[in-house]
Image (tube, rainbow, N blue to C red; front, side):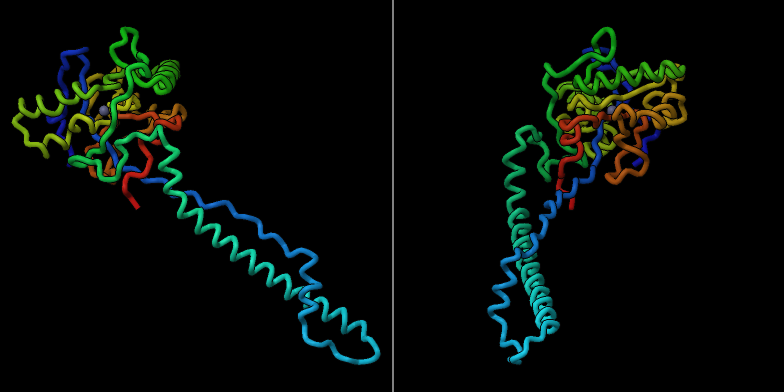
Amino acid sequence: MKIAPGDLTQFTIPSNNSRLCVGVERLDNAGTPEKPSDGSNSPPTVDDIPVALRETPDLPSKPRTNVALLVGSLTALGLVALAAGGFVALRMQRSQTVTLATENPTSVAQTSPTALPSASPADTLLNHFAYTEAPQAELAPIVPDGSIKMRQAAAKAYREMTAAAQQEGVSLVPISGFRSLADQKYLYFDVKADRNQDATERAKVSAPPGYSEHHTGYAVDIGDGNTPALNLNPDFDKSAAYRWLKANANRYSFELSFPKNNRQGVSYEPWHWRFAGDIQSLKTFYKARGQK
Ligand SMILES: [Zn+2]
């Protein structure tokens, strides 16, 4: 599923004349459910010992009290009581764990109003995951003319990252950020028609509308201002911009969406980075998507 450089999606979109890259999504690991916290086994209370003692068979009926034997018996009985108490506590904890485990899915579903409705396990198309469009009100520009936008938190991190790179002589240039459904419709269907590609063939290099990470406002395609010939090309990973990103992007909560040999088997896109630095973006990209 590698893209030949000549097959890259580089073209012009009518709205803002930005060159746009393919938009594909990646299968990510679902987080494992949290284990219920360990309840501390409450030790048996002091009252347990006399009760156990009363139920014990007869002590040796010597007229002369053997103190050592009595102390030994009491100790043994205490240990039995402790063990019994611990067993009861363990059973209680187990049943509590089962209760928590069975309640968990319901409570998660009820308390996650911010989860994207698209996160249902089966919501994939041609290997791409569904994403909803970010609300316009949550977008902020990442270029002076405002033609490229990201979600506010992502935009802020992106601007900081670009400034840091600049201080080291590296020129990060945004090529595409948020994309609407209409943008993606053009990318997928119109270009597909122009190139006489079938649906599967097209999906290898471009996600269908509704299935691109760019809809979320968290994804950005980054080029190198000093070596533009490498932009939107697998050889972008030979650029100074890419080397800098590999060494530093995580500091700004950006990560590569589609590394080489990614599990979903989508094309390698060294230019396509996504923000995962707040709870909403984490939910968007990491919430369970039907994996075990
Ligand atoms: Zn992209």
